[in-house]
Image (tube, rainbow, N blue to C red; front, side, top):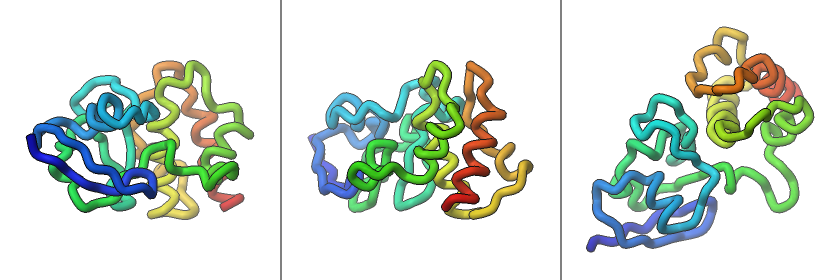
Length: 151
């Protein structure tokens, strides 16, 4: 079986996996990184949203072979020690989570948005396509604006 090396949340890792194995399963099943959630398996719900070389991806549709030699960041890699990322802190301050299932993906999408657009408009925030079955979209918007102002 082939092996693939990449940097996961700042630490080098190597895994043995089929080339076409989705990164989500490598993360969850082989590396025990459970922040990215399985929702649909086709990149639509975005519960698994993570970053590859700083850009937003849906690991349920990215083969592990595409990650070789690159940087993968999940929700577990956002905080700096005990200091939460500004988006994570805003999520807590604005009491965003309800059931919490989609929140890691929502946060990772928000971080990607703020990286590209430090002061996003409502329209830019609305372009985030992550699904929240609990409907916390107004609190998500509030948290992104707070993180934008605080960051």
